Image (cartoon, rainbow, N blue to C red; front, side, top):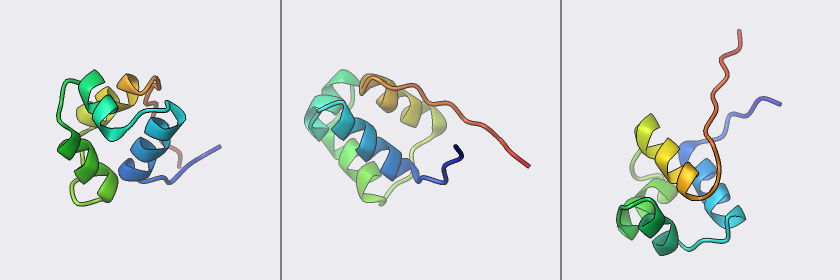
Length: 68
């Protein structure tokens, strides 16, 4: 199933499914809570590497499929 989810939406959903607070996710990803909050709030867009690292810290893997 294809998804057009936003990075902030993906991160928020992964964090909640992983039962983590923003602070807990930040600690697991070796960053600060404000970074997670800015991404989830949509005020900043993460790089692919940052998004992947945060999702992995929440217990998920980022996979991207390009479709015509």
